Image 1 (tube, rainbow, N blue to C red):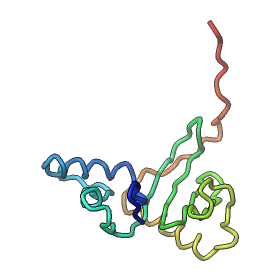
Image 2 (image 1 turned 120 degrees about the horizontal axis):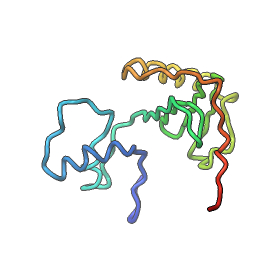
Image 3 (image 1 turned 30 degrees about the vertical axis):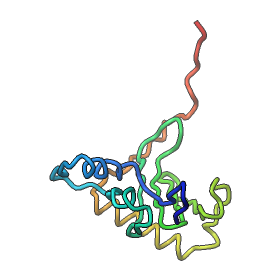
Image 4 (image 1 turned 90 degrees about the vertical axis):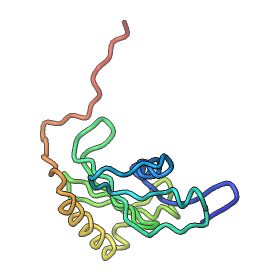
Length: 145
């Protein structure tokens, strides 16, 4: 989608690295990255990027979230929660705030994307999430000195 002032494409921040390399005239080091060079899109906003899945992998605990892996495929976003094995599924075109989990309404698509997540984790040889039953998400008490 294109308008005079905006380019609407799903990208990932790792896409910036090869894009900057291209504009700098530099070569990409000999290690693989899961990315897309956005320079053709910046030069000509009408350029069509290849359709692709974008993955986020968070196998750790933080104060913001529990361990998860996410795949974005077109308008769909699947969040797989490692500890419970549950999936959250959103149509980001119609539910940009991800307020309505529609996993129960699309079991075949959820299953297919869940399988893609498992294959991707194997393909990139990602470290596996280790459950931590002792994890406490309560923020530490602070003092005002």
